[in-house]
Image 1: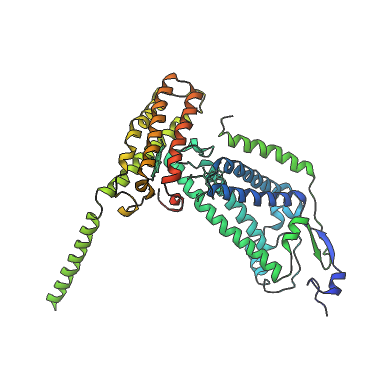
Image 2 (image 1 turned 180 degrees about the vertical axis):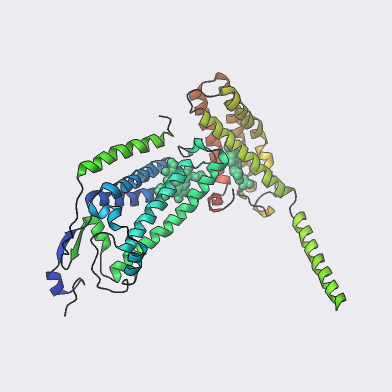
Length: 235
Length: 164
Ligand code: HEM
């Protein structure tokens, strides 16, 4: 009688298994990006542009690392493993109203789109910030010397507009998480913190964890790249 | 009836031309002042940026890049206050980020303007030494006087608008 995978059911709970879904680099990057974007938001709106730059560089670092990890990271972090074609996405969307669909090991087909759109929008905000010109010149982005005043103001405007777009994308992301929690009884936030998820029965799929040295190697390269950018290539 | 069509067309034409005249005459000196001051302020921002950018290079071009831009800032700054006559605020009808406080706290606005004039004059003196790090410090000192005034008298809404 009991429906497997629905929380609160005693019989089902006893047969629940814990599965690793996210490795620690992916989780750490997620939460650092959340903090960095929050700090960028507050400092941008409250005219603390010096700290705004630092937080922006942290965001840039995380975004680049996440893209790198999307190619060489653990199985659930890899783009190749979760980015799917429109047909799969459409099929998945048609099951959205079902409450007891099994949780995917990593991102589901729709969540994959959210990852890509979030990363792309955040990157666009950062890149336009790098070229943005502040009217009193004190806190222009480090690459603003490669554009003239007018162009730099254009970047500043897009920086502001794209940030508003980012807020909308983040809001959709949070709504989706809330929907899974309330309707499908899947706590995606807890998984992003602990890296684990309870499943009714194992499908046999396991998280393939990438070696730490690979993350460290990427970190060295990405840190060097971000540092060079912050100097405006005048190192 | 052709005559009524004619009256109607004539009527519409009259209304249109009156409206057009009203728009043109509602765009008097104040609107022109807003446009022209924004142009001049952008030139000053551009000048400050060009000096700042040039000073990051290993061998800055003192005579062809820095000098003319120091000149722009030095020559224009004494006039800044005159670009904000009464009536050239938001009530003029053109897009402006000048806050009404400019005309309510005229003395304080003038103080900001004087601070900038002093630092712009100093910019010219420091320029004569052709010392990159000293001039850069002065660019920052001048930029702070610009920012000090913008923080109080320029609306932060400028980010939200599509133009400028
Ligand atoms: C995720 C990263 C970032 C976010 C979320 C972000 C967000 C913001 C926000 C909300 C503002 C205020 C806009 C407004 O007043 O409406 C702002 C302004 C600004 N940001 Fe960023 N920013 C980011 C990264 C960067 C980076 C990396 C730089 C360059 C180092 C940068 C440079 C600037 C500058 C120069 C301004 C002021 C523009 C002006 O005065 O017109 N930002 N940013």
